[in-house]
Amino acid sequence: MTLPPDVPGRPAMGDATANQYVRVPDPTMAAYADEFLAGVEDLPTYRPTIGCVIPAYNEAETIAGVLDALLAQTRLPDVIHVIVNNTTDDTVEVAGYYAGEHVRMTRNGEQMTEIFVHDIGKNPDKKVGALNYGYSLVEGYDYLLGVDGDTTPEPDAVEELVNEIASDDRIGGISAIYSIDDSALDGPMAKFLIAGQRAQFSAFNMQNLLRGRNMAVLGGQFSIFATRALRDVLEDSHQRTPWVKDSEVEDSLLSLQIKSAGYLTKISAAARAHVGGMTTLRSLDAQQVKWNFGAIDLMWPGQRGDTPGQPLHPNLRLRWFEHISMVINITTRLMFLTLLLGSLSINAFVFSPWWLIPPMAAILLNFRVARSMYYGNRRDYLFAILLAPAEVYMWIRIGHFLRSWTKFASRAQTDNWAAQAKAERGAGQGYLAPLAVLLVILAVLAAIWLQIPINAKSDILAVGWPILGVITILQTGWMMTKVLRRYKGFKA
Image (cartoon, rainbow, N blue to C red):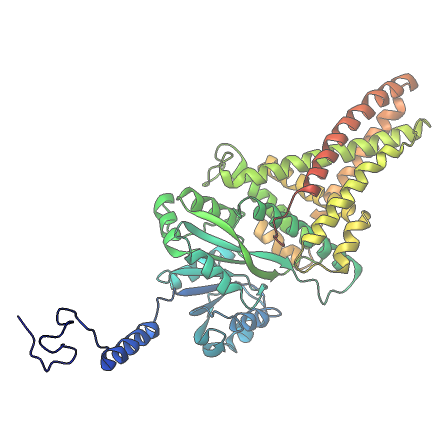
């Protein structure tokens, strides 16, 4: 088939180029192609949906700051449900001021969210009941964002979390990097306790960041969960709700279940949130005892309730390490204290400069922890280099540790949730028990020591000091290993 000679681009008959095809651009086709590509670029991409759940118990002083921080996010949740439970203050009234639709202009364009406030009244399951109520409202969304009623995220925290969890279908949940807000503190005790908690959180966060960002506990303070992972947990564990009321640490148990369902549990590399700290010895004791008791319950072999212990679960390895480290800390400190007092009682103590090495290693490690803080400040560095504050805080943690194991061993039925709420109201004296026990132990040892012949005392000291020396050398070597460990650019 031949083309007529008048067709554009067709050479005249007899031309030397008659057998060559000449392509002439069509300006209308080029314009159409540009228009088509522009339309493709304007097509909306799938945007994962986020349902935010905030369990709130007596959060009248903090809930406004939490909601303001969420409304200032570069990625707004699609919906925010404030679940008020068992409250006796004005939490409902304060949160109710924010109820309704909110439209914000962010760096990602105009976004909208809607806030609902639910007062579920007296709730026997407390925070667990509030979380499960919230889950029932957002289970159709792609992700559930859990936020505590006293946690304020950085402006890009939600965006960072959703980008990370959406990038890998294997991830079942991601926790933010937590820090404790130390502004607006009154009194030296509150400042001291918050400094200790900041150091404790920082060390814990860094351990998880350096372990491939595998997070043992997806803390309820500010974590995002894939709802498909929660549904798998319900099926695998034969539960009606993701969180169960028979665990002291509902977030730790859920993290274990998510991991057992075949998902990853991670800590974010960039999302940060500020959580509320405990500013009194009483409230800190109640919180730490509840956390430690729940962890022991998960670690203990066998089954003492509806939740079986899982001592070999990979998410509990760090817990075992923490408890073993605490036992070593207790051993070295009690041995040093008793041997020192015994040596002084018979004028046998001889100071050696070598004993200065362990405290110096501890200072270096504490300083390294302070340096790793993203929001480290002068108070954090003073807490580290003065040594005495960190040492006193360690003794406080030892008290929490011993109280937790004692309560667990006693098999007494104790509502640790109620105990924490009572302590935060300023009631209860349980936090003084470790000090009283220590004084009794020292008094008994002193009475026994006074009855021992001088030769036997010398023999005990001659054996005790070398044993303590060996343990201390090993402990110091471990501290220096942690001091020299690279942090790979992470900030806690």
